[in-house]
Every structure is written in structure tokens, then in C-alpha cells.
Amino acid sequence: MKKANLCIALTLFLFTACFSSKDFVAEYDYDYRGNFKKYKTFAFMEDTGTDSIKHIPVINKTIVSRLNSQGFSQQIEKPDILIYYKLFINQIRYRGYIQPDFDNWLSVRGMEILKEEKLREEEEEEDEEEDEEDRKKGEDYENIKYYENEGMLIIYVIDYKKNKTIWQGYTAANFDVNSPSINLDLTRATYKVMNQFRLVTNNYGYY
Image 1 (cartoon, one colour):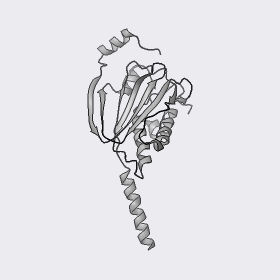
Image 2 (cartoon, one colour):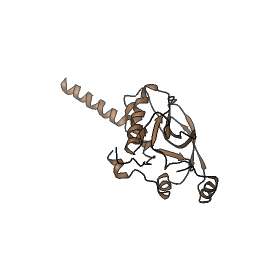
Image 3 (spheres, rainbow, N blue to C red):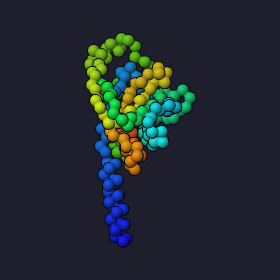
Image 4 (cartoon, rainbow, N blue to C red):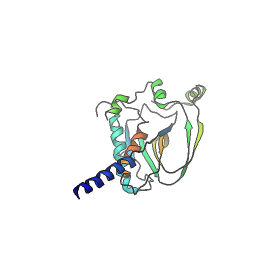
């Protein structure tokens, strides 16, 4: 009987492990006019608009951990950026853009990004002339469309002063809120999305 129970437990463990081993693929879009050199503090918007409110702490915790590791500090009053996210558990159409690699785009402008080694371990607003110059360099927004995804996690980074989204990351997946691995899935999905936003602040290294 003990051997039988052990076999059942092992089978359930392997089943859960396989079931939760989704390979989340994250994409992102960003605004060329974002004041990325200025951002140092963040806060969450009160209404995240998620479909499963009981899982919000899992997503919040992962985002806070990642941003802290990049030098950002959480600040309730007048933060530099607001974090807003949506979890869709049904089919959704979502439009994204084809743009230059975000890391390279930041580096060209003298901004630091979180290095891959660190990941493994776990300015002023641009004026109209600058914007026109950037567009001549190929900084356009070429539309692409994602049709009939079975679900999606989208994380928005919003400039608090401008009240404008300056970066958004997303990953498409079928999120089963009744699955025993939902917390793990949401953690991994959130990490994969935030892994695309590697901008670090002047406080980087103090965390």
C-alpha cells in the first residue's frame, strides 16, 4: 500500500511539474518619447482590471522583486511610473508593433540595462524636433496583430506625469485559474514579461 501511495504521489508530482512547465514567450512595445532616464520610483494603479483578483499578490510580488533588483523603489505619492496590468483568461485580439530592440535603443541613448548575468542570479521630454529626427532614423510603429489568443497577461508602464503608457509587455497563454499550478504559471509569465523591461536606475546596485 505504501508503495502504491508513493507511486501515486510521484505521478501527481510529475504531472503537475509537466503541466506547469509552459514556455511563455514575451513581447513588448514602447514609446520613443518616454523619459526613461528620469524614472526611479513606481507604484501600482489601484484598479488593475484583472479577471482573477485572488492572484493579484502573485503578480505584484514578482513585479516588485524585479523592479527593486533594477534600482527602482516603490513610492505611493507621485511616483515616476505607474504599473498597471490585465490578465485575460478568454480569447483576445491584441495589436502590437515591430520596433528596434528596446535594450539596444536604450544603450544608444546612454542608458544602462540589467545585464544577463544579473538576471540569471536573480531627462527631459523629447521635443518635436528630436521626435522628427528619431523618426528619420527608422523609429516608426509598424503594426502587427495577434489573433484569437486563448489568454494573455499584459503589463503596462505608465508615465505618471504625462498619464501615458511608455512601455507595455505581454505574453499569450491559456491561464487556467482552476489549475493547481496557476500561481507558478502567473509568476513565470510575469517574470518573462518583466524580463523584457531591463532599464536600471541610478540606484542600481543598492538593492
